[in-house]
Length: 245
Image (tube, rainbow, N blue to C red):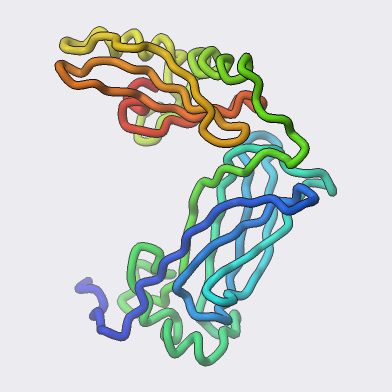
């Protein structure tokens, strides 16, 4: 399969997404895009855990922006957490995209280019293309939540150290040991020595950044994780933290 020709009239689609709260604590998906105004989009919001929260809604691009929601669960505000946000759009008959949108995207997405242009039938030379974007976004805390106390900030270190994380690209996906054990094992490598050790600081409201500071030979280095102390959510943020998880 030689691939399709790329013309100067192609649209390299881009979408940037975030989660924001309204005054009633409803969660909204907000974004900026270079898709033309009037483009119809579908969004899915997924929360990790069991049972898994799942909701879908539609919107239309306006002034190169998109706004979807609010999302809640049985009229209750969704907690601060990392949520998976999925955005898609198709350019075939059933979606009834406006004519001026299809002029830019092409019928069946024929003019779409870039990382978010997804072949609908990858095994076909004449496949249609859709827009697909899937990112993990952090929701802000609820408006009424007080700032983290000093004790809560420092507790993030213990939460991290006791956590057993899922590491992308690793088999099996779940680590075999808590983070503190993995860090101690990692630091046994030649040339690695402790520098400032474990540190915790507030990153944004409700979110703490925990770092482990060390020397990599003569060079200072730091593994970084993000922790939500009140929900005990943990994510590694840089390559050192991934290695040490």
